[in-house]
Image 1 (tube, rainbow, N blue to C red):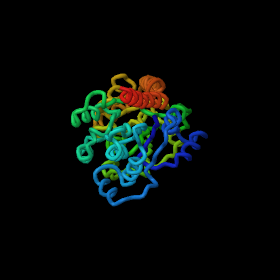
Image 2 (cartoon, rainbow, N blue to C red):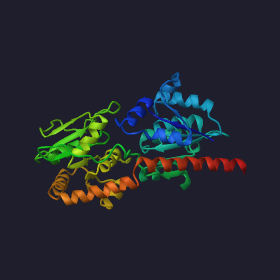
Image 3 (cartoon, rainbow, N blue to C red):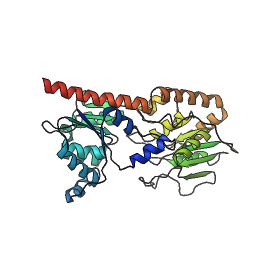
Image 4 (tube, rainbow, N blue to C red):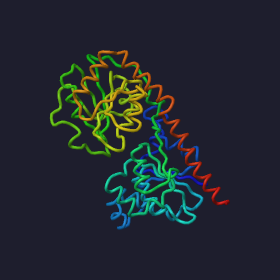
Length: 360
């Protein structure tokens, strides 16, 4: 079998690889997966566009993902397995490449399809018959796929692994500071309004890594007035690691959502051995709260968040216990080594199943 890996965005992969080799950035798991499977990596950045691509992107994905899917539909055969990193590239590839007699096996990692455009795309493009295996890290998404598409258990894989590079995100000494530092990061479904309300009266500095070339700032993300003790902006990778390590507490404040935003920030902070407070949600987040690896607060509860921050600042041993438990789980379970091994096993099993079917 021949393996393929499809990305939904274009990256300078060679530059990322070089930066990771010299410790300037975390490693991208796509390289290790590609090496172990001898897989070809595909990016939607160089293919000729047709008018139909512009029409299709109004439903799901982007025009360049549809152009990539058109090219792959010509080249992929029954000897190919293609793993798509998310639905934005995966559904176009499934629509044009999947479900064909002696066609490629299509595996798609799903982040958030339980929304109007996602549900429309699933039905309109007949995705049920075109994806061999759906993967997701979210129980709600897994349940939605099984129910909405009437899928058997073996067509949906709950894959609660996080590819955090624990050789890059690692504990380091904290820099000197005048008062406690509360750190947060990310833009997706972030509720910094609640974080600001919870900390504006505290003798702390709040530092937020919240800048992205690919995501716009939602109007509800930040309050209109930013207090003097709060700052936010761009941090490069090495500065981000140091920011985590300078933190007394890392807070991940979220609006309610059905795809578990905030996991990258959560696990990066745990890998740096920091106590984390996060907005309660189902799935991995609730499991970590139950395991006493992180502290949970209710959505939009600035008073509860204020109390949780004060509790950890006033009881360093509690914070150390949280950090130690979270760090242990990341080292043992939620890291890029475990992610790569489990994903390669899933894709290999797909190939074995195809070979057995061909022989029967």
